[in-house]
Structures are given as C-alpha cells and as structure tokens.
Image (cartoon, rainbow, N blue to C red; front, side, top):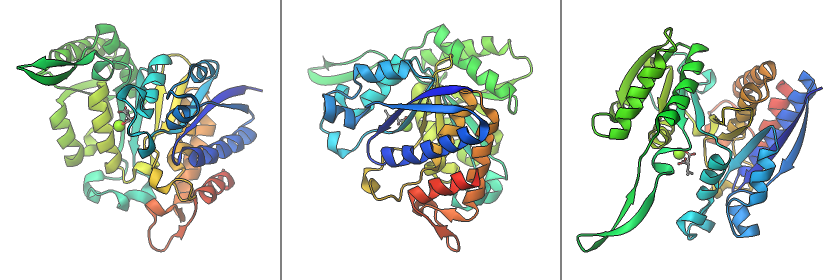
Length: 356
Ligand code: IPM
Ligand code: MG
C-alpha cells in the first residue's frame, strides 16, 4: 500500500482549523481508496516568528523536502505587521516557494454550479462551465529580483527589478502547454510586451515553446486588457500563463468571478513530485478560532494534491464531487444562501467525509 508523508504547515489565523478539516477528508479518502498517509507538522509564518524568531525556520524546509507533499493553511495577521519586510510571515511564504523550487503555481478558477449566484458577474456572461486555469510563475520576476533604496535627485527612492531568464520562461510555458493539452488546448500568455523588455523576452520564448505543441492554440494579451477581458468574457479563457506579479493580481480577480475566494484551491509545483497545496484565501484573523471558516478551499487543495503529486486521480475526483454535492444543501456563513442549512467549519468537514 502506498504510504505518503505529508507535512502540514497550519500557519496562522484560520489556518489550523481549515487544515484539520482537510486532514479528516484526506484520511477518509485514504481509507476508501486504499492508501495511507502519515503527517508531520512544521512552523511557517507568524506562528514560526513567535516560536523561533523567523518566519521560515530551517527545520521547516528540511521537513518539507523530506515529504511527498505539503499542505499549507494560511499565514499572516495584524500581530506581525510591524515586523521588518524580510521577517514578515509573507517572507516565510516566499522563502518556502524558493527553497522548494516551486516555480509553477496553478490557480484554477471554477464555478461550482450551486454557487453561481454568488458571482458578481451576470449569469449569461459566466455561462455554465467557466473553468480557467491560471499558471503563475512563482519563483522569479519582481518578487525575487534585486531591490533596494537609494537617493534620487536628493530624495529617498526605492527600486525593484523584474527579470526573467529564457529557461525560467520555458519551463513555466511547458507547464501551461502540458495542462492545456489535457484541457481545452488553448493558452493565453499574458504580458506587458508593449512596454517591458522582460515581457518581450517572455513573449518570444512562449512563442518558441509553443512550436512543441502544434495542437495548442496560443494567443497573447497585455495584462491590462486581460484584467478587463476576465470580467467582460471569462469564458474565452482556458489556460492563462503569466509572470509572478501579473499572476498574483489576475488570480485574485479570477477568484472573485468564481463567486467566493473561500472556495478556491491552488497547487505550487516544482517539476518533481513535491508540491505545496494551499487555499488561495488568507488567514482571516478576524474570524479565527470561531469554527465558522470555510474549509472547502483547503479540502479542494487536498484534491489537487492527490491529482498532481500523489497520482490518486480517483480520490481527487471523489473529493471534488463530494464538495459539489454537499454545497447543494449546506453552507458555511461566507457562502450562505437563504433556504439552505448553515454549518460550522467542523460540520462542513464532517459532511464532506460522510458524502465521500
Ligand atoms: C498570494 C499572496 C502572496 C503573493 C503574498 C501573501 C506574499 O498574495 O499567494 O497570492 O503575493 O504571492
Ligand atoms: Mg495574491
């Protein structure tokens, strides 16, 4: 029997509550589909700062590297807002992405049928099966480029650098094209090639890689236009591939189109088996500890883990189907609609397990 080692990074705020529900669901899936899971926990973010002084202790990196996959809750909160930039909880998140070489961030934006009315976009614009996969480059670009302070014209100034190498663009482009081959065979590469040199290199490189995928239709869009097209006609997109910072921004926009950020999962992949899976939403410190958070994005992150790291397709699909079914009747407060039953974070976890 396969036995997978999973490192849990529960993190801050609602992180621990939602990860606990996702673990319940993963255990249930293991039972049902005949595999085993063993867990180890490690610190990341604010809780790591409190315990060790830094947001990403060495031990956390070592534990993650020694596991088959990593499940992350969320990090950050007002308590750590006064930390210097390089010691904030967010720096821990960037650090773990870099340390594990997680260069490809997959952020699916899908509408669950029963939640369609939660989208702020009109029904006829969303259609019945909006399904966008944003592939965000995650270990390069301006997030990881050189930065600093200097003096310009006698006053303080600051600078950051957007830089991409050809091989960084090639490998993220291949992830996007490979995914498109399993989906709608369309890739939109998003850049700002009318202004930025790094975008011109990005575009040239994506075009070159596209020759390896003659079946995939490639188009290019400037990021400002893409932001607009996402609300004008989201159905036109299949796979979007873009840089670290553009992907950060566009994926928040796409998640809103899907109705609730509380529903969306993500995967960060290294090219090997090791991946890190986490909900797209943050640590929601305002509702932490109240057992009212929505655990579904984390539960769906487990489904992505089963699909992309553990090669348990059937279990992944079963979890997604169970979530869709449970949503027909039960809702956490963030996605509550009249006439349905309001449930807690824990009850939601139990319901998904029962449905499985
Ligand atoms: C995300 C977040 C992070 C990012 C922050 C918390 C550093 O917004 O995962 O999208 O910008 O990558
Ligand atoms: Mg973001």
